[in-house]
Length: 283
Image: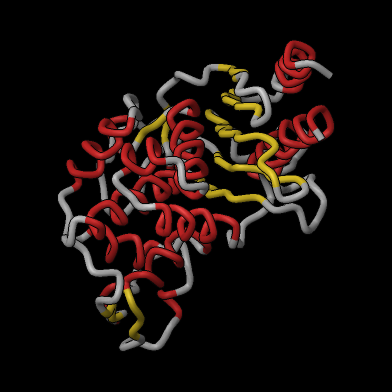
C-alpha cells in the first residue's frame, strides 16, 4: 500500500465516529507525512509532558536543573491528584529528579509533573517549544485545571497540534541516534535524547496507538485525556527500526455513545484502528 492509499484508508476510518478526530503521521522510511487536521490547535492534556521532559532536559544541560536532586513527596501534594501513583505513596518518599521525569512519562504522574516544572517559569516551556519549531504549542499550567466543562475554551489548558507532536518525536528519535542538528535544535545531548526515548518506550498506558498492535511491539508514546477527548503521540517500531510516527487526538467526545459504550472506549479504539492501519500498510 502506497502513501496515497494509506491516507485514503486513514481518512475513511476517521469518518462517522460520533466525534472529531485529528491526526498526523510521518512514514519513517520515506519521510512522507499524512494528515487530517494536523495543524488544528487542540487540548494537549498529558501529551504536553513530552515537551515538558525535553525542556527539563534542556535546562539540565544548562545547569539549571539537577537530575540527581531529591524530590520528596509531601502529604499536602496528594489531595485531588487524579493521575499517576505518587498520591498513593507514603509521604516522605524520596527519589531523584530523573525518576520524577520517568514517572511523569510512564504513569503520567501529576505530582511528579509539578516537581519537574516548579523551578521553571511556565512561559519557558512555551518558549522552548517555539525554539524547536513547535509553533502552535502553548503551555499554560503546571497542574491540569479541575472542574472544566466539556465545552471549555482552549485558553484554559495547554494546547498543541498533531504536527507539533510528530515534529518533537522526530527530533527526539534523531537526537537519540546522534544526529547533531537534532541535538543542537533540542538543546539536549544524544545521551539524554536516548534516555527520553527509552522512557517513552516504558509507557504503561497502551490502549491507543499501541492498542491493536502485537503485544510486545515497541512503542514510544505518551497518552493524554481531558474533558473534550483522548490523545496519544508515538513512535512505532518494527524489527528495532522506526516504522511511523503518529499523533492523534479525539475531540468533542460524548461521555456515552449512542450504543451505550463510554466515549472513552470508542475514542481509544478509533485511535488504535488508525495505528493498526499504518502497521499493516507499512510493515
